[in-house]
Image (cartoon, rainbow over all chains, first blue to last red):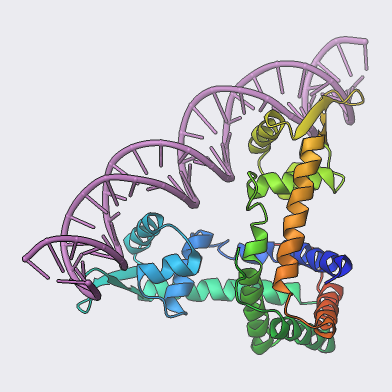
Length: 146
Length: 146
DNA sequence: TATTACAGTTGCTTTTGTCAACTAAAACTA
DNA sequence: TAGTTTTAGTTGACAAAAGCAACTGTAATA
Protein backbone atom coordinates (compact mmCIF):
# COMPACT_ATOMS: atom_id res chain seq x y z
CA UNK A 1 0.00 0.00 0.00
CA UNK A 2 1.56 3.24 -1.13
CA UNK A 3 2.06 6.25 1.06
CA UNK A 4 -0.43 8.25 -0.93
CA UNK A 5 -3.21 5.85 -0.04
CA UNK A 6 -2.15 5.86 3.57
CA UNK A 7 -2.17 9.60 3.57
CA UNK A 8 -5.67 9.66 2.13
CA UNK A 9 -6.94 7.22 4.67
CA UNK A 10 -5.47 9.12 7.57
CA UNK A 11 -7.00 12.24 6.17
CA UNK A 12 -10.37 10.58 6.08
CA UNK A 13 -9.86 9.39 9.61
CA UNK A 14 -9.22 12.90 10.86
CA UNK A 15 -12.23 14.13 8.97
CA UNK A 16 -14.43 11.40 10.30
CA UNK A 17 -13.27 11.68 13.87
CA UNK A 18 -13.89 15.37 13.91
CA UNK A 19 -17.21 14.97 12.20
CA UNK A 20 -18.53 12.49 14.66
CA UNK A 21 -17.01 14.00 17.72
CA UNK A 22 -20.36 15.54 18.43
CA UNK A 23 -22.09 12.27 17.95
CA UNK A 24 -19.53 10.67 20.13
CA UNK A 25 -20.78 12.90 22.86
CA UNK A 26 -24.33 11.68 22.44
CA UNK A 27 -24.59 11.58 26.15
CA UNK A 28 -24.97 15.33 25.99
CA UNK A 29 -28.32 16.63 27.07
CA UNK A 30 -28.38 13.67 29.36
CA UNK A 31 -27.10 13.27 32.87
CA UNK A 32 -25.04 10.33 31.71
CA UNK A 33 -21.37 10.35 30.91
CA UNK A 34 -20.11 8.70 27.75
CA UNK A 35 -19.06 5.50 29.51
CA UNK A 36 -22.34 5.28 31.34
CA UNK A 37 -24.22 5.64 28.08
CA UNK A 38 -22.09 2.95 26.51
CA UNK A 39 -22.78 0.67 29.46
CA UNK A 40 -26.52 1.06 29.09
CA UNK A 41 -26.10 0.35 25.41
CA UNK A 42 -24.07 -2.78 25.92
CA UNK A 43 -26.36 -4.09 28.62
CA UNK A 44 -29.62 -3.10 27.02
CA UNK A 45 -28.99 -3.72 23.36
CA UNK A 46 -26.11 -6.08 23.08
CA UNK A 47 -26.16 -9.20 25.09
CA UNK A 48 -23.71 -8.24 27.77
CA UNK A 49 -25.20 -9.02 31.12
CA UNK A 50 -22.23 -9.64 33.35
CA UNK A 51 -19.42 -7.39 34.46
CA UNK A 52 -16.66 -9.39 32.79
CA UNK A 53 -18.35 -9.10 29.45
CA UNK A 54 -18.47 -5.37 29.90
CA UNK A 55 -14.84 -5.06 30.88
CA UNK A 56 -13.99 -6.91 27.69
CA UNK A 57 -16.37 -4.99 25.49
CA UNK A 58 -15.30 -1.59 26.73
CA UNK A 59 -11.82 -2.54 27.87
CA UNK A 60 -12.11 -0.84 31.20
CA UNK A 61 -10.83 -1.79 34.61
CA UNK A 62 -13.09 -4.07 36.59
CA UNK A 63 -12.76 -2.00 39.74
CA UNK A 64 -13.74 1.10 37.87
CA UNK A 65 -16.59 -0.74 36.24
CA UNK A 66 -17.84 -2.01 39.56
CA UNK A 67 -18.17 1.53 40.82
CA UNK A 68 -19.83 2.69 37.63
CA UNK A 69 -22.40 -0.06 37.91
CA UNK A 70 -23.05 0.82 41.53
CA UNK A 71 -23.67 4.37 40.48
CA UNK A 72 -26.11 3.31 37.78
CA UNK A 73 -27.85 1.04 40.24
CA UNK A 74 -28.10 3.83 42.79
CA UNK A 75 -29.72 5.98 40.16
CA UNK A 76 -32.26 3.28 39.48
CA UNK A 77 -31.23 2.57 35.92
CA UNK A 78 -29.87 -0.87 36.52
CA UNK A 79 -30.42 -3.93 38.63
CA UNK A 80 -27.80 -6.40 39.70
CA UNK A 81 -29.29 -9.68 40.75
CA UNK A 82 -27.50 -12.74 42.02
CA UNK A 83 -26.91 -15.47 39.52
CA UNK A 84 -27.91 -18.86 40.97
CA UNK A 85 -25.99 -20.64 38.24
CA UNK A 86 -22.74 -18.95 39.23
CA UNK A 87 -22.77 -17.18 42.55
CA UNK A 88 -19.64 -15.25 41.73
CA UNK A 89 -21.39 -13.28 39.05
CA UNK A 90 -24.32 -10.96 39.02
CA UNK A 91 -26.79 -10.57 36.24
CA UNK A 92 -27.21 -7.08 34.92
CA UNK A 93 -30.58 -5.89 33.71
CA UNK A 94 -31.80 -2.44 32.88
CA UNK A 95 -34.77 -1.21 34.84
CA UNK A 96 -37.67 0.50 33.11
CA UNK A 97 -35.95 3.80 33.87
CA UNK A 98 -32.75 2.42 32.38
CA UNK A 99 -34.54 1.40 29.24
CA UNK A 100 -36.06 4.83 29.04
CA UNK A 101 -32.65 6.46 29.35
CA UNK A 102 -31.33 4.21 26.65
CA UNK A 103 -34.23 5.14 24.42
CA UNK A 104 -33.46 8.80 24.96
CA UNK A 105 -29.84 8.27 24.11
CA UNK A 106 -30.81 6.54 20.92
CA UNK A 107 -33.21 9.27 19.94
CA UNK A 108 -30.55 11.88 20.46
CA UNK A 109 -28.02 9.89 18.46
CA UNK A 110 -30.51 9.46 15.65
CA UNK A 111 -31.22 13.14 15.73
CA UNK A 112 -27.56 14.00 15.44
CA UNK A 113 -27.14 11.74 12.46
CA UNK A 114 -30.23 13.18 10.84
CA UNK A 115 -28.80 16.62 11.42
CA UNK A 116 -25.43 15.81 9.90
CA UNK A 117 -26.99 14.44 6.75
CA UNK A 118 -29.80 16.90 6.54
CA UNK A 119 -28.52 18.67 3.45
CA UNK A 120 -28.14 15.60 1.30
CA UNK A 121 -30.46 14.66 -1.48
CA UNK A 122 -31.80 11.11 -1.38
CA UNK A 123 -29.38 10.18 -4.14
CA UNK A 124 -26.44 11.55 -2.23
CA UNK A 125 -27.57 9.81 0.90
CA UNK A 126 -27.66 6.57 -0.97
CA UNK A 127 -24.17 7.19 -2.28
CA UNK A 128 -22.92 7.73 1.23
CA UNK A 129 -24.59 4.57 2.46
CA UNK A 130 -23.06 2.62 -0.39
CA UNK A 131 -19.68 4.08 0.39
CA UNK A 132 -20.01 3.03 4.01
CA UNK A 133 -21.02 -0.43 2.97
CA UNK A 134 -17.98 -0.67 0.73
CA UNK A 135 -15.66 0.26 3.54
CA UNK A 136 -17.24 -2.21 5.90
CA UNK A 137 -17.13 -4.94 3.33
CA UNK A 138 -13.46 -4.56 2.68
CA UNK A 139 -11.76 -3.61 5.87
CA UNK A 140 -11.05 -6.35 8.28
CA UNK A 141 -12.51 -6.00 11.72
CA UNK A 142 -10.06 -8.36 13.32
CA UNK A 143 -7.74 -6.39 15.51
CA UNK A 144 -4.27 -6.92 14.19
CA UNK A 145 -1.63 -7.91 16.68
CA UNK A 146 -0.06 -4.92 18.41
CA UNK B 1 -34.02 10.69 6.03
CA UNK B 2 -35.63 7.41 6.93
CA UNK B 3 -34.86 5.43 10.04
CA UNK B 4 -33.34 2.64 8.02
CA UNK B 5 -30.65 4.95 6.69
CA UNK B 6 -30.02 6.34 10.15
CA UNK B 7 -29.66 2.86 11.46
CA UNK B 8 -27.17 1.98 8.76
CA UNK B 9 -25.13 5.06 9.45
CA UNK B 10 -25.02 4.45 13.16
CA UNK B 11 -23.99 0.92 12.47
CA UNK B 12 -21.17 2.15 10.31
CA UNK B 13 -20.17 4.56 13.03
CA UNK B 14 -19.89 1.80 15.58
CA UNK B 15 -17.92 -0.28 13.15
CA UNK B 16 -15.60 2.53 12.31
CA UNK B 17 -15.06 3.66 15.85
CA UNK B 18 -14.16 0.20 16.95
CA UNK B 19 -11.96 -0.33 13.94
CA UNK B 20 -9.92 2.75 14.50
CA UNK B 21 -9.82 2.61 18.23
CA UNK B 22 -6.34 1.16 17.97
CA UNK B 23 -5.28 3.87 15.60
CA UNK B 24 -6.83 6.38 17.87
CA UNK B 25 -4.32 5.29 20.41
CA UNK B 26 -1.44 6.01 18.10
CA UNK B 27 0.41 7.30 21.09
CA UNK B 28 0.98 3.69 22.02
CA UNK B 29 4.56 2.56 22.02
CA UNK B 30 5.36 6.15 22.78
CA UNK B 31 5.70 7.90 26.07
CA UNK B 32 3.12 10.40 24.93
CA UNK B 33 -0.51 10.45 25.87
CA UNK B 34 -3.15 10.97 23.22
CA UNK B 35 -3.55 14.68 23.96
CA UNK B 36 0.17 15.22 23.95
CA UNK B 37 0.46 13.51 20.59
CA UNK B 38 -2.33 15.66 19.24
CA UNK B 39 -0.58 18.76 20.52
CA UNK B 40 2.64 17.89 18.74
CA UNK B 41 0.62 17.26 15.63
CA UNK B 42 -1.21 20.55 15.76
CA UNK B 43 1.93 22.51 16.52
CA UNK B 44 4.23 20.67 14.16
CA UNK B 45 2.00 19.98 11.19
CA UNK B 46 -0.87 22.37 11.32
CA UNK B 47 -0.15 25.98 11.78
CA UNK B 48 -1.09 26.32 15.42
CA UNK B 49 1.65 28.10 17.24
CA UNK B 50 -0.08 29.79 20.12
CA UNK B 51 -1.96 28.40 23.07
CA UNK B 52 -5.30 29.93 22.16
CA UNK B 53 -5.22 28.28 18.79
CA UNK B 54 -4.66 24.98 20.50
CA UNK B 55 -7.48 25.43 22.98
CA UNK B 56 -9.75 26.08 20.04
CA UNK B 57 -8.45 23.24 17.92
CA UNK B 58 -8.63 20.65 20.67
CA UNK B 59 -11.33 22.31 22.76
CA UNK B 60 -9.49 21.91 26.01
CA UNK B 61 -9.24 24.16 29.01
CA UNK B 62 -6.50 26.76 28.82
CA UNK B 63 -5.27 26.03 32.31
CA UNK B 64 -4.97 22.38 31.49
CA UNK B 65 -3.27 23.20 28.25
CA UNK B 66 -0.78 25.45 29.96
CA UNK B 67 0.32 22.60 32.16
CA UNK B 68 0.49 20.18 29.26
CA UNK B 69 2.72 22.56 27.36
CA UNK B 70 4.95 23.00 30.38
CA UNK B 71 5.30 19.27 30.57
CA UNK B 72 6.23 19.01 26.91
CA UNK B 73 8.71 21.82 27.33
CA UNK B 74 10.25 20.14 30.36
CA UNK B 75 10.69 17.03 28.29
CA UNK B 76 12.48 19.03 25.65
CA UNK B 77 9.95 18.50 22.90
CA UNK B 78 8.75 22.03 22.70
CA UNK B 79 9.94 25.58 23.06
CA UNK B 80 7.90 28.54 24.14
CA UNK B 81 9.47 31.82 23.13
CA UNK B 82 8.18 35.30 23.79
CA UNK B 83 6.38 36.96 20.96
CA UNK B 84 7.67 40.51 20.45
CA UNK B 85 4.63 41.35 18.34
CA UNK B 86 2.24 40.50 21.17
CA UNK B 87 3.86 40.11 24.53
CA UNK B 88 0.85 38.34 25.97
CA UNK B 89 1.38 35.35 23.78
CA UNK B 90 4.17 32.87 23.38
CA UNK B 91 5.20 31.25 20.17
CA UNK B 92 5.23 27.49 20.22
CA UNK B 93 7.82 25.61 18.21
CA UNK B 94 8.79 21.97 18.29
CA UNK B 95 12.39 21.22 19.09
CA UNK B 96 14.36 18.72 17.06
CA UNK B 97 13.38 16.13 19.63
CA UNK B 98 9.77 17.18 19.27
CA UNK B 99 9.93 16.81 15.52
CA UNK B 100 11.45 13.40 15.99
CA UNK B 101 8.63 12.35 18.31
CA UNK B 102 6.11 13.60 15.82
CA UNK B 103 7.80 11.65 13.08
CA UNK B 104 7.63 8.52 15.20
CA UNK B 105 3.96 9.07 15.86
CA UNK B 106 3.32 9.44 12.17
CA UNK B 107 5.25 6.32 11.33
CA UNK B 108 3.28 4.34 13.85
CA UNK B 109 -0.01 5.69 12.58
CA UNK B 110 0.96 4.86 9.02
CA UNK B 111 1.94 1.41 10.10
CA UNK B 112 -1.40 0.83 11.77
CA UNK B 113 -3.27 1.91 8.68
CA UNK B 114 -1.09 -0.29 6.51
CA UNK B 115 -1.83 -3.16 8.85
CA UNK B 116 -5.57 -2.64 8.75
CA UNK B 117 -5.67 -2.63 4.99
CA UNK B 118 -3.02 -5.24 4.48
CA UNK B 119 -5.38 -7.86 3.12
CA UNK B 120 -6.93 -5.75 0.41
CA UNK B 121 -6.14 -6.06 -3.24
CA UNK B 122 -5.20 -2.84 -5.01
CA UNK B 123 -8.65 -2.74 -6.55
CA UNK B 124 -10.34 -3.10 -3.22
CA UNK B 125 -8.09 -0.46 -1.74
CA UNK B 126 -9.10 1.89 -4.48
CA UNK B 127 -12.75 1.14 -3.83
CA UNK B 128 -12.29 2.00 -0.19
CA UNK B 129 -10.53 5.23 -1.03
CA UNK B 130 -13.31 6.16 -3.40
CA UNK B 131 -15.87 5.37 -0.77
CA UNK B 132 -14.10 7.59 1.71
CA UNK B 133 -13.94 10.37 -0.83
CA UNK B 134 -17.66 10.05 -1.44
CA UNK B 135 -18.42 10.38 2.23
CA UNK B 136 -16.20 13.38 2.61
CA UNK B 137 -17.65 15.02 -0.44
CA UNK B 138 -21.18 14.75 0.78
CA UNK B 139 -21.23 15.14 4.49
CA UNK B 140 -21.04 18.64 5.79
CA UNK B 141 -18.20 19.38 8.12
CA UNK B 142 -19.85 22.41 9.61
CA UNK B 143 -20.86 21.60 13.12
CA UNK B 144 -24.59 21.98 13.30
CA UNK B 145 -25.97 24.02 16.12
CA UNK B 146 -26.39 22.03 19.30
C1' DT C 1 -9.16 -32.23 49.40
C1' DA C 2 -5.96 -28.83 48.10
C1' DT C 3 -4.90 -25.67 44.69
C1' DT C 4 -5.72 -22.62 41.24
C1' DA C 5 -8.53 -19.57 38.54
C1' DC C 6 -12.27 -16.36 38.32
C1' DA C 7 -15.87 -12.48 39.36
C1' DG C 8 -16.57 -8.80 41.77
C1' DT C 9 -15.74 -5.24 45.56
C1' DT C 10 -13.04 -1.91 48.01
C1' DG C 11 -9.14 1.19 49.38
C1' DC C 12 -5.58 3.80 47.65
C1' DT C 13 -3.24 6.36 44.10
C1' DT C 14 -2.49 8.67 39.81
C1' DT C 15 -4.07 10.93 35.91
C1' DT C 16 -6.99 13.91 33.73
C1' DG C 17 -9.72 17.69 33.51
C1' DT C 18 -12.43 21.90 35.38
C1' DC C 19 -13.03 26.38 37.56
C1' DA C 20 -11.82 30.64 39.29
C1' DA C 21 -8.51 34.02 40.62
C1' DC C 22 -4.67 36.50 39.11
C1' DT C 23 -0.90 39.06 36.08
C1' DA C 24 0.47 41.37 32.24
C1' DA C 25 -0.32 43.06 27.86
C1' DA C 26 -3.40 44.66 24.18
C1' DA C 27 -7.54 46.79 22.42
C1' DC C 28 -11.01 49.83 22.88
C1' DT C 29 -13.55 54.09 24.42
C1' DA C 30 -14.67 58.50 25.82
C1' DT D 1 -4.31 60.06 26.71
C1' DA D 2 -6.35 58.05 30.85
C1' DG D 3 -9.50 54.68 32.08
C1' DT D 4 -11.88 50.53 31.02
C1' DT D 5 -12.46 46.21 29.02
C1' DT D 6 -10.59 42.03 26.51
C1' DT D 7 -7.36 38.78 25.84
C1' DA D 8 -3.36 35.25 26.67
C1' DG D 9 -1.44 32.69 29.71
C1' DT D 10 -0.27 30.92 34.51
C1' DT D 11 -1.33 29.06 38.92
C1' DG D 12 -3.89 27.05 42.91
C1' DA D 13 -7.54 24.39 44.50
C1' DC D 14 -10.49 20.95 43.46
C1' DA D 15 -13.41 17.25 41.18
C1' DA D 16 -13.93 13.54 38.19
C1' DA D 17 -12.05 9.68 35.74
C1' DA D 18 -9.26 5.79 35.62
C1' DG D 19 -5.88 2.36 37.14
C1' DC D 20 -3.64 -0.85 40.52
C1' DA D 21 -3.48 -4.13 43.98
C1' DA D 22 -5.26 -6.49 47.86
C1' DC D 23 -9.11 -9.02 49.38
C1' DT D 24 -13.58 -12.09 49.58
C1' DG D 25 -16.23 -15.61 48.04
C1' DT D 26 -17.16 -18.98 44.55
C1' DA D 27 -16.11 -22.25 40.84
C1' DA D 28 -13.08 -25.32 38.40
C1' DT D 29 -9.51 -28.53 38.53
C1' DA D 30 -5.79 -31.69 39.66
